[in-house]
Image (cartoon, rainbow, N blue to C red; front, top):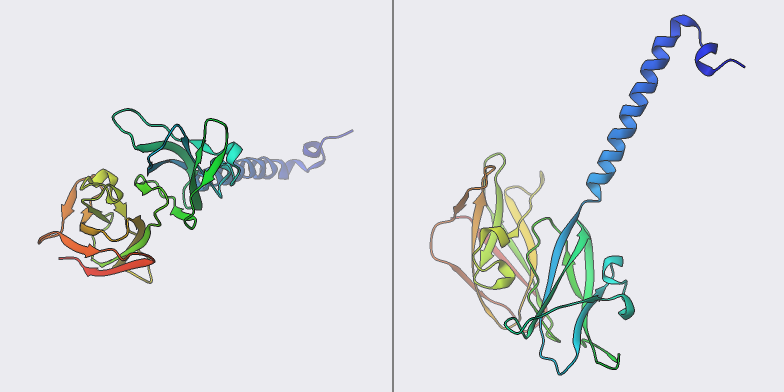
Amino acid sequence: MLSTYQRVPAAWRPVLVLAVLLADLFAGTVSHARAATTQDTSVTFRVEAATQGETLLVTGSAPQLGSWDPARAVPLGTTASAYPHWSAGVRLPVGATVQYKYLRRSPTGAVTWESTPNRTLTVSPNTPANHDRWDVSPVSATFRATATTSWGQNLYVTGHLPDLGSWDPAKAVPLTTGATTYPLWSGAHQLPPNTTVQYKYFKKNPDGTVTWENGDNRTVVTPPTGTLTVNDTWR
């Protein structure tokens, strides 16, 4: 029996070989693109909670967090110097919006959930570590800033709270923009309620250097519950 290659006229055989090569190349490109869209990054969950022999865990809507199953929740750890702060790193897909909650597990295995609503996190490659408080509902804060940038520059916001990176540009909250919204940049992060927040914007250049905006630190007070939106202009 003749192979497919042998049944093709000799004049067309080079075209068949080229088509096969192009198909393999395309398949490899698609595979690479799929891998890129499913990139994971490490997210640190951190919560302040006093305990009496219990351990702390975090669970949530993502399979990596146990899909709300306490038996598959991620255990948090602490040390004598870090207590009452508990933390754990979890790899989550970039771009995913995850709901999560903390729970306590007693030495006998009894589980106590937080009574507050589910917390929400949108995963980005530079997601700052969460600094949550047991049974305290955070405020969902949205930072909106109008700023023109050069090609390759990006805008970030940081502040004095650990939630905003404690003035460390490497831990700042990234802001995003688009073709229809530029020069307006925006980003969201959870903040503690009833708290005075100092913050400031900066631009990060393609080489990693940063340019801070001028003027004193900005200040805002978070509400007791709900959401907070600030609208600023780069200065």
